[in-house]
Length: 154
Ligand SMILES: CC(C)(COP(=O)(O)OP(=O)(O)OC[C@H]1O[C@@H](n2cnc3c(N)ncnc32)[C@H](O)[C@@H]1OP(=O)(O)O)[C@@H](O)C(=O)NCCC(=O)NCCS
Image 1 (cartoon, rainbow, N blue to C red):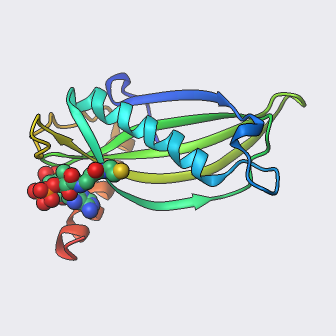
Image 2 (cartoon, rainbow, N blue to C red; image 1 turned 180 degrees about the horizontal axis):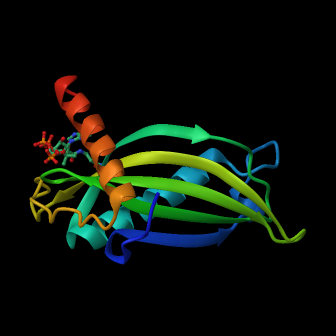
């Protein structure tokens, strides 16, 4: 994903407690989505310096289960900006701290956040500053997804 631009990225760590579990004793998927939504919200707010709402979630992939007691690291990074929309790429990486092991990537998804004004209407946001070639490539891919959605009217 390239070098992180601090204004448009954020990482948050959280211990998975028994209160986060599903009936099978692993972490409930909805808990992780809530964490991802919170990070997407914070990253998009930080980028736009305004209130934002979640408009869409794409390509959610649950790569592996997450066990209670592990530490999840949720990272969010702005990959594309439209006029008022901000696409944030979210990942969840897991560490088994009891056994001092890294368990790798458990989830990834794209969240589209929209900056809104005091009347909850979309507002213009600053464009993403692209630092390197990798970010430029990511931006182009985001632009393709954005244009495709516009054509399909979401
Ligand atoms: C998101 C929202 C503000 C868009 O308002 P709208 O009047 O439909 O806005 P527009 O059609 O002018 O679109 C504004 C931007 O949002 C984007 N957008 C709107 N709906 C979208 C969707 N479903 N998926 C992806 N992008 C979307 C548009 O592409 C546009 O981006 P751009 O400005 O970068 O070109 C409005 O639909 C809303 O408030 N939705 C509910 C959000 C919410 O409450 N989320 C939390 C749920 S618990």
